[in-house]
Image 1 (cartoon, rainbow, N blue to C red):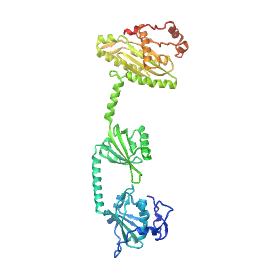
Image 2: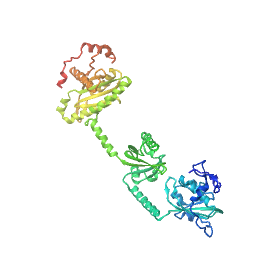
Image 3: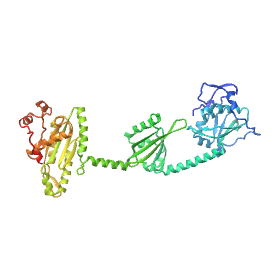
Image 4: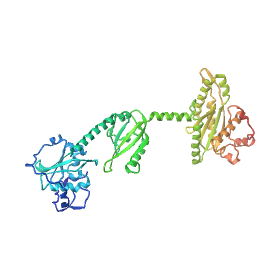
Length: 501
């Protein structure tokens, strides 16, 4: 409500004169006062004497809504029940027109009643009064002249205007108490917050969820409970609902900070509007879904990782390969794929048992992780076979450096209790896009190269099988000696020795 306290003493035009409506939104419209005066209820017989000046403290102990007006209908004083029921502060009402507390279509009628009081001592009428949030309360109002602080004033006294309405108020009061009881004891966490995010209320379940007491939550911004990456999404949701471009509610999942951790919550966000359609506040119903999210993450991890070494499995390797291809195409890079196989692993398993074999595989996995870059992927695809996916390499030398480092680490003895094992591994290298444009083709090419390496002895590296020209080989920066070796001793297409493993 906006008003100008300087307008308090402005006179209201006499009946029959044309006037603009003070305190209304009609601005330049003029209405003959005589047209609206007949709508006023007949005057109540005058009291033998005017109302003596009472104390405001006494007014505040009553249930009635009591407003003290000057002769022009501007508010001078309001009792506490009126402030509470209308949801205003005294400073918001002081100096404003009484007509501002009524729906716009009742404005001229209220002004007319003020005019009519120039001709009578008391009037009685029934018109619903409007709260700050736009809700209307049905009341019966008595308007009387009296003395207040050495000036002639109007006393505006309103109360429920029938037994039916009083019963309705009583029912509303019972419903309010019932709602408060259900709200406070509900198992579902519920939080109310203003359009700017300031928390207005939080039930006990939400306090327990957030790990904070009620007084630690009130007047705090709801968005302060969200991780930084969730705040922008939260603001977009609110703006979409306020603007009316979407539904008045949204169902979504997010994360919130509690006192000691971050949890996942399932949210139902609702916006409450006043009777005039103006957005008032939001209600957020929440459900803690952290246990479910953790279980889903565990299932996802089991589906994409090797249970023994916790390395990515073939499924995860495929996803990483697709990502690596997109990077390679965007930046003009290559991808190296290394297939690595332990030499004589079957002998170790048969001689020392599967427990020692499993411990050896776990140690191999840890060494391979430490030998590659952070952007690379080490995977176990079965038995003693490991794959290293090298992203964003420029030539084969980049891949060979990583591979040589990995083989050096694997060549160090492994201690299992009192047992010391000397191990070695053979590897084959293939490169995208020259040795294949899919993961399956690159694995076949690397597999062929690895078994050619095994044919030359343990701990060897099989180089890519290039079907192309000297110019294509030169893209990988192979030196002349290596290039001549490839041309002089190409692998036989009929060599099936790797099938005997």
